[in-house]
Image 1 (spheres, rainbow, N blue to C red):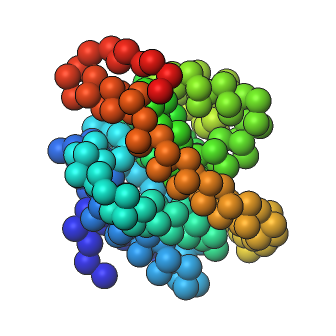
Image 2: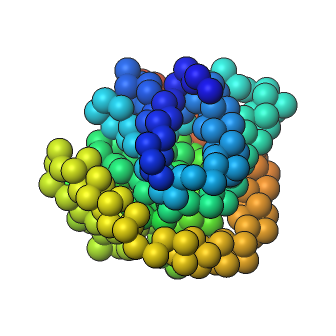
Length: 260
């Protein structure tokens, strides 16, 4: 299938999915979200792919949800439609019957970071900018961000990272347990290629059975959290703090939050 905002290539037992909106640092607009959800759902039936690498074209992995889209989807029904697509994307990615690898360079922020940490392995360049930074515009993580953060670092640390919204480099994120491997800038592609070769020369069918056992146990929890994120995000979008956060972002100034 031909896509507008992503590219999927399959060679032997490996798939590579590339985000293709480099002009916007691969920000996820409605078209990209739909294409990602469709692609991941179709890959559920792909029996010959055992490893999938996701990465970004240009200067970044993904800067997150497209702010322009967020401003345009101000009606509740339109916002709920977007959140439903995001839930489809996260659920399908989590259930992929293959080893998933996020190859990160540049920014991996917000929704882009939620998708990255949903992967089985995360390889990031040392000067990547990694952030669960929804808090900066008065929102909560979505795309299963709460679930995947908890899976990676546990609930107490997940709360602290979400609340701080700090931009981390590769080394800082690795120390927290958010990513698995840090490589020098410009070396992620080479490292991932070698890593994929290692995986494909391993008893990967046994590895995939282990993934299936763990993920089948947790899929209902992920779906529940996605539903809770929809309800909570709908509430947050109507707050004064969110409106101030968006306005401050557009005006490139520090926000003045009032707790309302």
